[in-house]
Length: 98
Image (tube, rainbow, N blue to C red; front, side, top):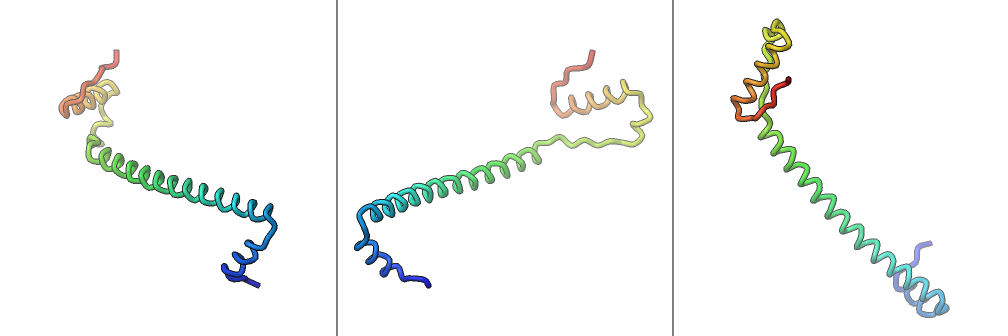
């Protein structure tokens, strides 16, 4: 049977001091945990927003690579040279394999 908050408050005032102190400590701990939960929720939302912004920036700045099926007839060295040339045309600095 559920009791009203005012009924519980009046019974708590009449309760043993040890019980009142225990309830007070529980309420204090509950408040601390609620603040910690709120901070974690804010951090979670901030992290989600940062991830979305980074994913968007990555998508906008990612070089587009097009593969021509005719390229598969090239030798491995020719494909590497073609890929390096395409990257250099887009302004990337590429270390050529030795």
